[in-house]
Amino acid sequence: MLWLLALACTCGGAAPTAATDDVSSDEAATSEDVPRVYRLTHEQWEHSVQALLDLPEPSGLSAGFIGNTMSRGFDNDADVLLVDGILFQDYQQAAQLLAAQVTGDDSLYDAVAPGLRADGVDDWLRAFGEAAHRRPLTEAELESWKRIYALGPELVDSGDEVRDGVHIVIQAMLQSPGFLYRVESGEAGEPLNGWEAAAKLSYTLWDRPPDAALLADVETLHEREVFASHAARMLGETEARASMSRMFKHMLRFDDYPNIEKDYEWDTSLRDDMHREGEAFLDEVVFSEQQGLRRLLTADFTYANAAIGDLYGLDITGDELQRVSLDPGQRSGMLTLSGFLTLMSEDEQSNPIRRGGYVLERMLCIEVPPPPDATTGVGAMEEGLSNRERVDRHTGEGTCGEGCHTLINPLGFAFENYDGLGRWRTIDHSVEVDASDTFVLDGEEIAYDNAVELMAAMSTSEQVHRCFAEHVVRYTHGRELQDADESVVDELTASSLAGAPVLSLIVDAVSADSFRCNH
Image (spheres, rainbow, N blue to C red):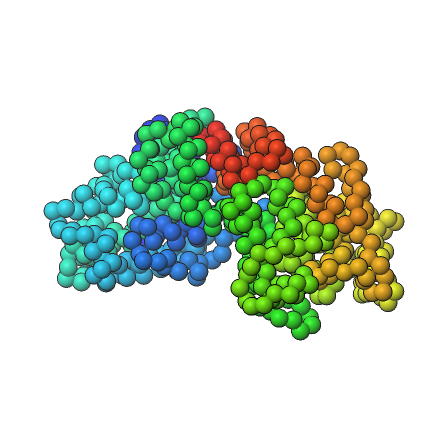
């Protein structure tokens, strides 16, 4: 049996207080401005399935799904969360497996349909449908699901008609647009209805369906104060850490750490250690210390074990991570940690172009055009020639790469004190390292001797804080920026510059009209 998945819906729709019907393929259309439906990410799908079916742990089935597409570094952008033929089959197969798993296990079945009898099917369908769709079913929808339930004995034929009906409803519900998508149905400018607002907030902060406390306030979620109080409450729970940390993981490209390769022999377990180090650092600053971007860019500590400690010249024993202080003259925040520096390197050598390009694009929000097809690279290292001199010879003043690299290279050269594994160095191929340069921030040229000084300048730069504010809005809103977001970005920029914690910025971002209203 095949249930079609709707890919989008129209901008117009029911009044914001009305329940939204399932989106059918006949009604599917794409808004010219904003996607009106938001497909669940694979993480959200896992949590939704676990909650709906009361599974003791995530199913793990999404690990076999075709991967989420990244957009500007984030995997929750509705513009790219589409369903192609492969993902359609992934959903269908997962639904079949889960329906069989639940109805084939008495304990799982009893959790989903406790004491269900034929005369209680209507009530069960209402409750199960509301849980799956994150809103009450309409009477028309209830009738449709009753017809699907009635197909169970014919399609499953286990001899237990009630259980067969449950089986086919689970299988269909897990493929329904109301389950796979989060729908925004109201007129432009109107607040989301309470059910839509609850789902949007919960999936944004927790990657899962709304909890009972949030659903208890669906009638008052249109009030900004109520909405903001729930956002603050939810960010204080452990469920928020994974979702909110994902924003930084995408920004810092943690997902690329497993792909770090070196031509020489090196301990590949460092990739996992570096990943754990980065996660622990972010968790400490954002959640434990509840600090802001300035702290992220200037902190002089990290979490290290023996292997990571060796990269920093620290004597640490054991595999467990522990908080350690770093030399403030050598390290300053998340861009001077071992994982970032190793990822943005060659084999044993640094890569100023890669490091500088990252800072330009991710920290300053300045897009860099791709290199020309005829680009030949910067050549091999030569004795008596520093890495900086090698790069400058091929991309500096008077070369074909002069245009873009006048922006990229000065930022990348600031990190020349770190080799291909992020280890501190003062000599590079018998040449004294020169990590000094200048760059224009906030319209003024600044000078710095190394990455520590560059990070200090960036930590107080309006341009940097504005770029970070744009990332926060883009991630929390699950889409690219629009004109309506400009005022929100302005407010977050000012707050971040003033030292606001990251969590406060997130509360403000999701409390904004651009998040809580239809557009």
